[in-house]
Image (tube, rainbow, N blue to C red; front, side, top):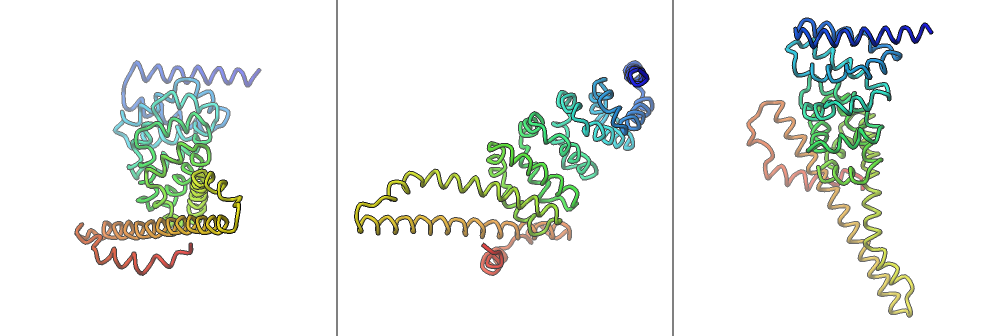
Length: 301
C-alpha cells in the first residue's frame, strides 16, 4: 500500500513538473525540471514511472531547445538512465530519439552517450528496425568505427553492429554495402581489445554469409559432377572443382589485400589530418604502390 502511494505521488509530481514547463516556457524552469528528472531516474523503481509519464518527449525536445550545456548533458544522462529499463523502450521508440541520435553521431562531445543509449535499445527487435530505417544509418556507424579515436565510442559502435549483424541478414547486407568490412579490419588491427573481439565476431558473421552464398552458387554444379560415370569424367570433375576452389581462394586473397591497402590509406589520411598537413599529401601513387607491394603479406590469410 505504501509503495502504491509513493508511485501515485511520483506520478503526480512528474505531471505537475511537465505542466509547469508547458505553461511557463522559461529556460531556467526547464533546466530545473530536467535536473529533477535526472535525479529521479537514477532509481530503478522510478524509471518506468517517468517513462510512462510523458517525460521522454520533453527530454528529447530539450536536447535541441536549450542553450545550456548543463541542461543538455542532464537530458542525455536522464535519457540514458531511462533507456536501461525495458519498459521504456517503446516510449523511447515513439519519440524521435533514435533518429535524433543517428543524425548527431558526429558530435564528439555527446557521441559516446548517444551510443550508450543505442546499446541499451539494440537488443529489442523494434529498436534495431528503427535504427536501420534511418537514412544512411550504417554509413554513419561505419564512420564512427573508422574515424573515432575514443575507445569507448569504438567499443559501443562495434557492439551495436555486432548485435544487428547477428540478428538480421538484411542488416548484414546493408553493412557490407556501407563498407563495413574495411573499417572492421582496421579495428581488429588498431582498436582496443574489446573492440577487436567484437569486430572479429562481425567479420566472422559476414564470412559465414559469404560462404553460404558461394555454396549456394556452386552447389548445383558440385552435385552434378560428384557422381562421375567413368575415369575421364571423374578427372574432368576434379579439375573443374580444383579450378573453382583456386578461383575462390584467389578472390579471397584479393579481397584481403584490398582491405589491408584501404586500411593503410585510411590511417595515413587520419595521421595527415591530425598533423594539419596539406590535403594533397595523401595518398600519393608511390605510397599506394608501396603499401600494396610490401605490407599485404604481413596479414595471415
